[in-house]
Length: 477
Image (cartoon, rainbow, N blue to C red; front, side):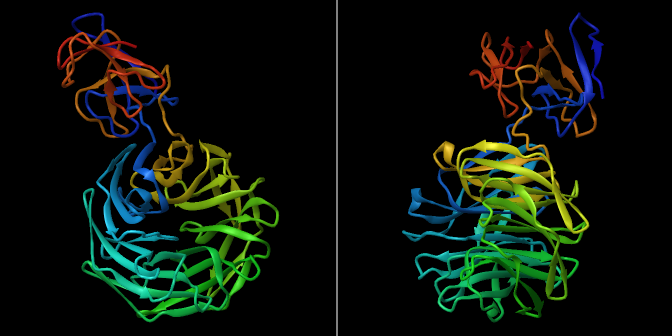
């Protein structure tokens, strides 16, 4: 929609009216987008931990609430979780809560999954204070507050990696892990009751030993849970399909999905194509690859391996975009840049959109999930270029980290909050925005990348206007 100028009834100043893209709050700076819509400036990047974050995992309920779990050296590697919400481009975080508080706790391969039947988040982690036994806790979220149920030991062995998914047919959470003392792929099905969880007996899904990589994904069409892992003896990529019955899980035969050196495996389910996308590092050819898998009973057939990146990759993550029927694929490119591509399934093949650099520098300990209500992939990772701080980015299919430029600020919204798609009114140059608070008369204000105004210029530096009272700002562009 193009912008339309409407003269003021009282002077030569005026307003613009245009279609809002996303929620447009009242009295906020407005930018015009390339398609002629208007929105508030946004910064897709949020710091969730001002410390070096390790073993990061994220899950969402799909309706705008998410939980990030991680560890950090500032608290002797205690396990922490933080709840947040996303609405449009706005992320709100609560305070981090500790779910494992003992000193010298290190979590390797932690994972978190959302249970839609109980509306709870389930955490899985090796407990460093208890011989690294695999442990689970239920997390309850209210707004951005989080609380935990009783810790339950799932496996009294040293467990270094695990991965979980939710079986919506059996209404069970399935966790698969490396049983290091017996060199197996182990798994169990869990049932949430209130704020606690119980598990059926531990099953051996495969006698091959997973090494440093494991990914678990539920296939809603087949009603099966597939586990993909790096085999310790060959280094190749293998899979096993698990079936839940009651509180038990059993596995089919194991087979290779990549007969070459394979690491950094991730997987997600494309509910439209009813297929699984597996992304991984092909260490045999030193590139990034992806393949499409189709489950039939307890076997998986695969299409041709597609080249995701022509250079070595690390820390892959996939998340299915149910709005656009595409798969977000994130990976750290040669320990140098966090990168994203969109994958599209056709038949048993996958093709990719343009490779986009999201941020420079080594970005490991990554996790990604898609939130349908926000229409965004939530990517959580440790950012090397910012003191290894835990970082969250809310990204659409363009992987845009901001919509703010030095030229696209046009004025201040007025007339109330506008829903996405509605016609919004914007006061433009020379008009007076009288919907402000706590301004200082005579002070210059600048547009910030998070959609607010401040007395210090952001980057880029964009002058918003001059305050003439605590509530009024003369708009300048």
